Length: 133
Image (tube, rainbow, N blue to C red; front, top):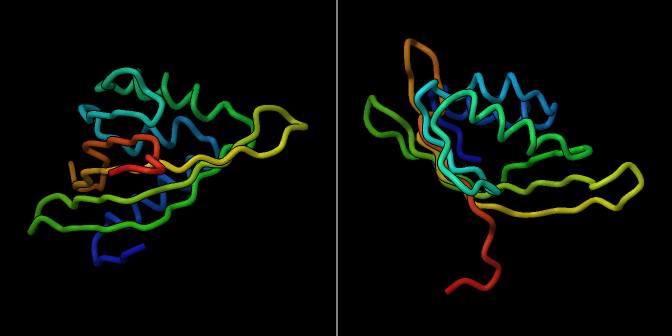
């Protein structure tokens, strides 16, 4: 992961830690209240904290859900937000005695400071296309 002299990299790390602890409240708290979010498995755009909570409550309910960041690029926009684009890999189990399942996804995020703290302003995630053009 690219390291910047900003809070953007730390915000992404907090997101990974919150997901890996399956802490829905902590994940949702990282998003600005008016953020826009297209989840990896979402059928619609979410733009309210209650909708983020609903999505992550379902998404993180899988046994042993874990995420790890892969390739990542961060682009500061002057003194404004930081654009992040990359990939992550999710691993989970469908039951206590089942083999782990893994899936890669790609994402873009807009990370910015709002009221003095770093928050996710926009997040889009989609399933990895194995044999894309």
